[in-house]
Image (cartoon, rainbow, N blue to C red; front, side):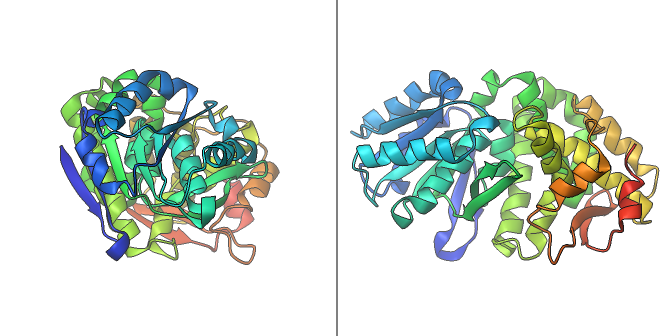
Length: 356
């Protein structure tokens, strides 16, 4: 097991990374506020991993409330969030109740937002079960739900008490979901670590066949980078926005196509290529670099082109982006592989030039 720390003074918390951690109640017990626990999961993950977690809870003489939600990005909305509140109230859950998110990014985001808002805040723990959630969404305290007009538009910054990344859960992940998570891993190399990007170029096939050592290293390095950035800029007033490389375009794709049609990582992959093309257009990035980026994404079985969405529609959805200020969309662009910066002076002519 490897342990990292997200350093946020009195709200700091550990990230434990390793195999078989669901069966380690000793890792969870110090972060429970009381014997009152509610586990939030979905129909898919619940069938696979709820019983091992319940067994760990039983060893602590804890009988959790279990809340099983429908599976998928399409359910990341107010109606599904209400199901969590309903179950918490029906079971008389109090402010000492710890919520445990057992699942991928959707479950983690919704459980975290429920924890942030139920009785004005209860503690919660992240147990991410997908690669994407282990390397990205479970760390950093971004919680929320989608709105029909934009992804993650309703939410809160609310940090977990613990992130428990059991890498053995990746054994049951579909190939498509694994590739989706790899998009976020590749993102870290692009935005801030050229050597990590080069390591990915050499090892992407090992990650695709789920080589344990390679996956553990990729998860650890991704979490190290995110933990460092979050510690420096928790509420995204500056540096943390760089973590949104590819996301301005990607969120527009997800919203336009209907939540769940494109997986998050797939949309981000296409979005990173669009950001790369825009970086070249404004003279930041050498034109030859795009082939390296596209080749790595393709080797990871990810798309490198957006779906057929009109420029006008793209602009409309991107205008809701949370980095937009005074009507200006801020883009995360590349100076080079391993160095990203924010740019808010992109003209519509420059932007339109990257569309087919």
